[in-house]
Length: 229
Image (cartoon, rainbow, N blue to C red):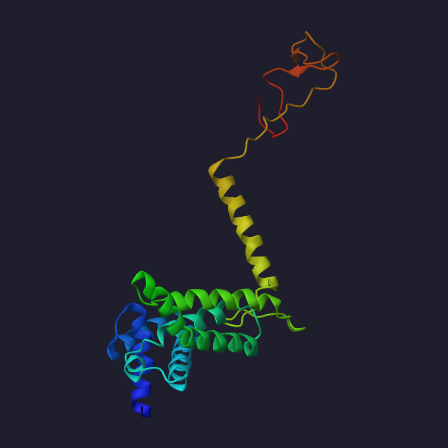
């Protein structure tokens, strides 16, 4: 199998994820994944490459390799393991490579067991070996540096909020308070009239008092606002 045939087998392996063994299907699948995440698309291509190479190295039937039957499980396994391994980049690449190799070389063995029930390996190698690698990776010690997420290498353990962001949040609170004040007008207290000096309850300047020793001015008395009551 020459380089051109090998490359076609890798692309067909990506199309086989959706049961399409044509080169065009593999290209479309790769472009679609790349639109969502170029990093994940690269992992798929890398997984299919490792799986196809592993199958060729152990002497698998060339016709099956050319059809991409030893690329799709490895592509899925490498992408999933690297994405959720939560290890630094060197480590998640190692896990992805191991899973891709196992998915490829383990497919004939799984096919033998599943032939008893009259079916092929399908995606069972990917499910079995990816789960195995994900369980094993928990026993690998982390580096001293904080682990990075495999998809993008982003560190989600630190959340930095700038002073500008805090100022924006405060402005939002002020705007909400202004809106509430505009919708619900404030209740203004009734102006309190001044008590005329020397007025007593019962005379013409004071009609009655709200409390002992105090009186309310008559209509002609002046209020605190300067107008008549």
